Amino acid sequence: MIQSRMQYRVYVLAIICWVAGAGQVKAQGLDLKILQCINPSQPDAVFWQTTSSSAYWIPAAASLGTLGTGYLQKNKKLQQNGYELFMSIGISSLLSSGLKVTINRPRPAETHPETIYVNTYSTGRSFPSGHTTVAFATAATISLQYKKWYITVPAYVWAAAVGYSRMYLGRHYPTDVLGGAAVGIGSAYLSHWLSKKIFKQPAAKR
Image 1 (spheres, rainbow, N blue to C red):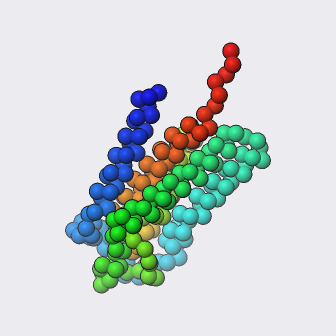
Image 2 (cartoon, rainbow, N blue to C red):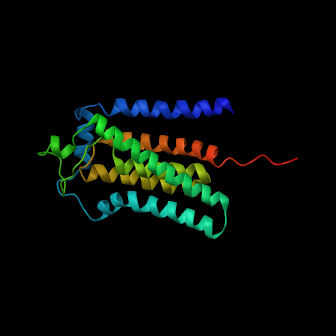
Image 3 (cartoon, one colour):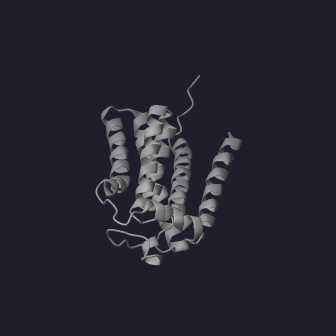
């Protein structure tokens, strides 16, 4: 049990350290070239903007829906899953915001306005991608809770699409998206561990 707890902590710490290092990578070379290949001169702001926006309403709907269903059905497990998803989203958002302020990386269009195209100007910092962070936190949490391939695969496909949309729209570098995915997955594992501690079932009486 102690070893398992330590593995969770080391895993989360390693991800956070990796993200902090990756965020310091300058937008040069391969990072910028990949973004230029993905970001078109006239981004389609309909499909990919909708995909990008889903990073917030899908997690909200999933967590509220799970929690609400749990209380309506008086299902303790669903209630726990709902709270765990809330924790994962909250932790990932806090970590993402903290890293943005700490690393203070400009948006791609700010640094390369002549080669990176956006439909609307974005404020805020670039690393990590907040949309990607929340999307992967949601996907990883759901995958840890249900462990079914027909749930896990669509969840991660959606999260990956959100990450791609941020690059397609010219809002983030590839390393921003990778960093967001790492923070999101790490947050999911941390919230999963915390959930087990908080909602620990009492031992059965003999």
